[in-house]
Image (tube, rainbow, N blue to C red; front, side, top):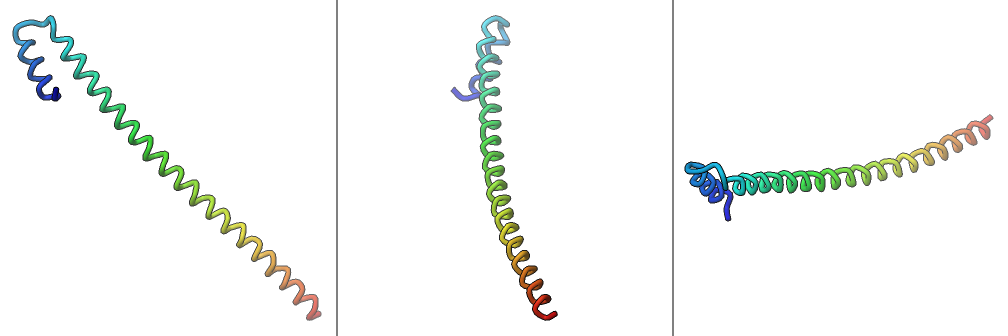
Length: 87
């Protein structure tokens, strides 16, 4: 049953009596809760994917920094050897 139909049934019944309308109100509340739960689950999934992507990028960046450190160390050593041989 659609949410609109559920609201129509509630409104029709609520005009004549206040008893018996709790079913409709509870069903609407349950549907609202389910929609919020689904939205939170989707958002959580999106955030997880973004965090995983950030972790991959951070790892790659760290790997590049490590390579650059080795290159700089090798160049520094080569410079030191050049200075010692020139002296």
